[in-house]
Length: 495
Ligand SMILES: Cc1cc2nc3c(=O)[nH]c(=O)nc-3n(C[C@H](O)[C@H](O)[C@H](O)COP(=O)(O)OP(=O)(O)OC[C@H]3O[C@@H](n4cnc5c(N)ncnc54)[C@H](O)[C@@H]3O)c2cc1C
Image (cartoon, rainbow, N blue to C red; front, side, top):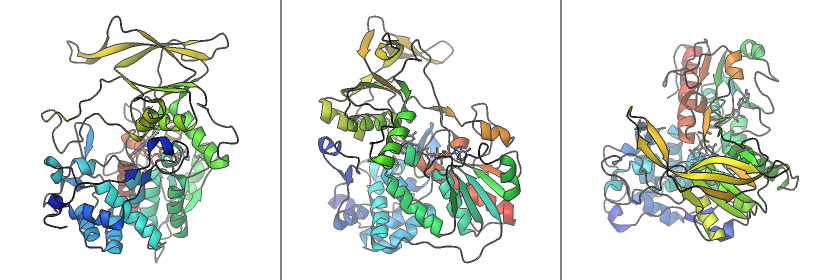
């Protein structure tokens, strides 16, 4: 159980960060690992508290609490404290196929559910998780482990994001022959073409995919099922199908001037930037460029933050981020948002730190609603008109935003990035497979079962749950593989 007095002896320490001003000059990882001893001390802070809420993933009030993959957190914390890194790695892989992805980019709802966090800073679980897996790769402990026997069953996984990769890894372990179809030129889904390089690099994704390939999984990129690979072939070539195609239909903003040039979806900006960076170090010019532009990012979430960090590296001229919500408080509301819920507090993420380092202040403007875009004579956006809003509950109990008179403002802009979320999965494949959907357009398949109305077709990840987190995608991919294995074999060996 770590060290009995560990939490009293050692302060919480997470991965350090390179200086924001310095790191914006490159696209490398912005974090700096801790030393072996520092990580062991962090492991020593875990009390193995008996009811470890950290590892019991659930949703409370629509936010994630604890770890959705039920990571064996207290076990590997203790093993790290004792210096048993190889065993810690083995225990880490029991519940999570890809601790390197979550170790880099998970918002760590395990930490906000850590019992120590009730009255002390919580255990630095994500830092320990990442340190274990990076040590594992550095030592050569992470090696391909192909199954000893094959079942002769073939499974198609559509989509190579974290849900598809987790499903493929688990089905391959069970001995099935797995082909992963991916419409993009590179695997990884939003790990590759959503989250930017400095937060989660393609090398990290490729390193794992190489191992999966050596374990016997086939990856077929540039193949869009339902377009250049027919659904009929899918049904005849495979015994089962797991759909993991994500939820990437953009939410749009319907205001005057939306059609102007320079009003772009954040995902088009992020995708083209990463693709060009990986293809040519941004020399091919095939990306939406922020260079020399006044950039406005509409949306205060993770995608917006990634846009800030990308625009700053592309040498934009100025940078503003609109958040329609009020600025949150520095400490959580103990009544409305108590432990172990994820704390709804003001955070300064890596992109905002970088924008502040380059332009001198935090880029965010709060409680701002966009009213219209105005263009020049060539149809290029040149202004964004806004008004401040306050949240009100109307007589029917609906949350509405009321405009505050006199707060109208005009902002100069050459590039506007819409980072306001996603409305659901793309429908063409779903329709071709005759799969039923929920009212919100996600695929109808019960959590824990993942079966759709079409026999032998399963669904997992964002396309079933709606836009969510890497860790939920891994959880759903693993569990869908278990149910698929049960369907194929009549019983299952998968957790
Ligand atoms: C910009 C951004 C930043 C994010 N940052 C974080 C973060 O820091 N931490 C976090 O936990 N979560 C983050 N998320 C959310 C997280 O990335 C997603 O929840 C997760 O990737 C969902 O995984 P998935 O496998 O369900 O889908 P996706 O990752 O979307 O993968 C779906 C894949 O299916 C492919 N595909 C679609 N249709 C077809 C077809 N017909 N044939 C073949 N292939 C197809 C797509 O090309 C894609 O590669 C972020 C999301 C975005 C957009």
